[in-house]
Amino acid sequence: MKKFSKFTFLIAMAIVMIASFIFPALNTKAEGKKYEIATDITFAPFEFQETNGEFVGIDIDLLNAIAENQGFEVEIKPLGFNAAVQALESNQVDGVIAGMSITDERQLKFDFSDPYFESGVVMAVAEGNEEIKSYEDLKGKKVAIKTGTEGASFAESIKDKYGFKTVTFDDSANMYDDVKTGNSAAVFDDYPVLAYGITQGNGLEIVTEKEKGGSYGFAVAKGQNAELIEQFNTGLANLKESGEYQDIMDKYLKAEKSTDTNNGFFGLLESSMPSLLKGLQMTLILTVVSLVIACILGIIFGLMRVSHLKILRAIGVIYVDIFRGTPLIVQAFFIYFGIPAALDFRISAVAAGIITLSLNAGAYMAEIVRGGIESVDKGQMEAARSLGLPYKKAMAKVILPQAIRLMIPSIINQFIITLKDTSILSIIGINELTQSGKIIIARNLESFQMWLIVGFIYFIIIMILTKVSNRMERKIQNGKA
Image 1 (cartoon, rainbow, N blue to C red):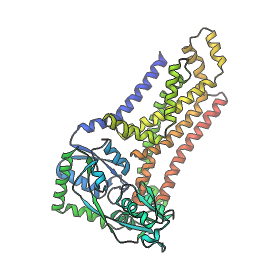
Image 2 (image 1 turned 90 degrees about the vertical axis):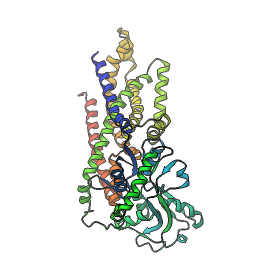
Image 3 (image 1 turned 180 degrees about the vertical axis):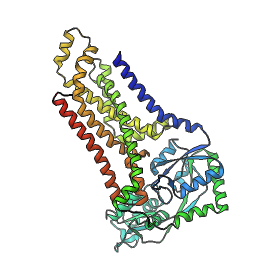
C-alpha cells in the first residue's frame, strides 16, 4: 500500500507539472486583449535580444508602440522563422512579425497588414574576397541563403541563369559564418539585415547594387484576428503621422557599432552568462521533469514488454517501436504543431517539449526496464513462485529489486542523452541552453567563441553526471549500494 501511494504520488506530480505548463497557454488564449505574437529573434535589426534579456529591434519596437497606441498587450514568442510560420498555421499564436515579405503564395494562407517596410536584396562576400564581384562570378559555386527571406527568393529566381547552387540556413549568423569560412562563395540577404550586420562587424562586404525587393507585413491566420490587423494598420498610420515610426527606423538603421562591448572571450563570458544560465536552468528543468515522467512510462511499458499477456506485450512493442523509430525532431513538430492544429487547441512550447522528451525517453526507459528484468536469472522467478508467491508479488519483491540495481547506470546514461536531446527543442522556440546561444550570436555575431562557451557548459554538466554514474556503477558492482 505504501509503495502504491508513492507510485500514485509520482503520477500526480507528473500531471501537475504538465498542467502547470499547459494551462497558462490555454488561459492566455481566453484573455482576448493579450495577443501572442511569434517572431524570429535572430533577425537583427528587426528583432534580437539585448544583453539584459529584453527583445528589441524594428519589428519589436514597432509592435510595442502600436500595441500601446491601440490599447492591447502582446506577448512575444521568440521562435525561429520556420517555427513561427508553422505556429501561426497551427493556431499556436495570434500573429507573426518577423520581417515577413508579403507574397502571393503567403497571402493564400495568411492575412497581412499594410506594408510597414520596403525591403531590397543585396549580395555580399567575405571581406577581402577579390574573386566574386558580380552574379556571373558565381558559376559553379555555392551561395548561402536563409529560408523565408527576400534574399532566398531572389537567389532561387536567378540561380539557373548564373549557374550556382543554394545552401539554406535557418538563421543569419550561421549563414554569414558559412561564407566567412569559405564553404559558400557569397550570400544573398535582405538589404537592411545585411547592412546592419556589416556595421556590427559580421566580416562581410556588399558587392552588388540593391535589387528591388518586396514589402514586410504583419501576418495573422487567414480569416482570423481581423480586429488585430485593423488595430495594427490604424496604429501604424498613427505612428507614421506622429513621427515615431521614423524615430524607430533611424534608431536601428542608422546605428553605429558600439565600442563599449568587450568581445573577447572573457568579456563575452561575462556579458552572456546571465542569459546562458537561464537557458541552462530551462535545460535542466526539461531534463529532470521529462525523465521523471519517462521513468513512470518506462516502468509501465517495460512491464508490459515482459508480461505473459499477448495484448500487453503488443502495446509495449508498438509504443517502443513508434518512439524509437522516428526522429525526435519529427515528434516535436508533430506534438507542437500537428496535434494542436488537427484538434484545434493551443499548447505551450515548453509543455510540448516535455511531452516529446518524456514519450521519447520513456520508450528507451521501457527497454532498460525490460532488459533489467530479463537479466535476472529466470530461476529467481521460478523459486519465488514455487514458494507460493503470486506473479505480481514475486515480480515486486524478488525480481524488480535486483533488476533496478542493474538498471541504474543505464538510467543515468539515459539522463545524459535526454539532457543533450533538449537542444533539439530549440527548433520549436524553447529558450534552453542551445537556443540561448543562438540568440546571443544573432546579437554579437561571435559564433566561434559563443559555441565554445556553450559547449563548455554542456561538457561540465555532462562530465559531472558521468562521474556520478561511474561512482554508482562501482558501488553496485562492489555490493555497497
